[in-house]
Figure 1 (cartoon, helix red, strand yellow):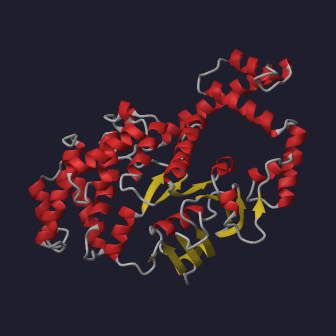
Figure 2 (tube, helix red, strand yellow):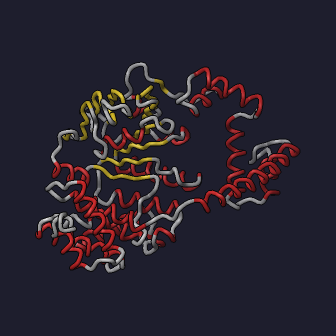
Length: 439
C-alpha cells in the first residue's frame, strides 16, 4: 500500500437538515478524512452519532451541505446524473443491516438483480451469479426465498449481490446488527477475507467496539464529528494522522474497558469500570466466557445443567465456584422467561410488513437511475402507485403502460410514450423474474 492519492477524500464536509429553520439539525460537522485503496475502515460510535450519514455521504445517497466529497476521480456534489449511475454500478457495493432482499425472489435472482437493468446478456449475468454463489457457499439454498433462509444466509446473499458488479469499494452499514454472534463472526470473517484476498476497500459502520479489530483504522464518531482515529494494523499506522491513538497488543483491563465505551468521557468510563468491579468482579475475558455460554443456552445448544457445568469448568469454561455458577443458571432462566413474555407482547403489537412495497422501491430506484429527465413529486408518487398496482396484479402490462403515458391531470404518471413503454418492459421483466422465469 503506497501513501499516494486517496481513493476517498472528504474536505470540511457538513450535512445539515432544514438549514435556517427552527428545526435545523446538523448530522455531520466539518468532517475531513482520507481513505486509501485496499484499507479496511470502521466508523464506530453510538446511535445518532452520524456514522451512517457519513457512510451514505460517501455512497452518494446523502448530499453534503458543505465541503467536498471525492471518491476516485469524482466529486459527488457536482457529478452529473449519468456519471452517478455509472458510479453506483461500477465503484460501490452496498450492504445493509436489514439485508433488503426481494421477498419474492430466490437467493440466485436476488444476486442477479443489480445487472437486471444494465443491458448485460442473460448468459453473462447468470455466469457471474453462479461464480459468487459458489464462492460464498450459497449453492445449497440458491433457490430459496429469503423467508426460507436464516439471517446469516440472507446476509451472505446480500454480500454476493453487492459484489455482482465487481465494485472497488464495499460500504457496509451495520452488516451484522441483525445476526447472532456466531453468524456475525462468519459474515465479518467473510468481509475480512474479501479485503485480504481481493484488496477491496471496505468501510463498515458499527456501534459494537468488538467488531473494530477487523479494521486497519477505526474512526470514532460522536455528535457528528470524528473524535479520534485508531490504527489496529501496520497498514493502518501508515495512514494515521498526528496524535493518533495506537492500540497496543498488551492492554490493561482498564484499557480494554475504555475501548468498549469510546463515546463516553473518561470520568464516566472510570465510574462504569469501578461499578462493574464492585458488582461483577470478573475480568473481561471471564465475562466473555460467561456471556458466550449464556448465548449457547439461549440458542438451545446447552441445557440449563450444561450451562451451570460450563460456568463451573475451570479448564474450558468460566472457572466460577459451583454455587455461583448455579445462581447464574437460575437467574438466567428467570430473565429469559421475562424476555419471552416481552417479545410476545411486542410481536402482537407490531404491524405486518409489506414485501411488495420493498419491491416497488427497488424497481422505482432502478427505473429512475436510468432516467435522464426529471419528475415532479406528484409524478414520482403516481409512478410508485402504478408499480405497486402492477406488482399486486391490479394492473396488466398494457394498463400499466397506458397509465404511465397519461398526463397527471388525466390521472396518469405524465411520462412520454417512449419512456412509458421502456418502463413497462423493465417492470414486466422484473415480474417475470419474481415468478422464477429467469434461471
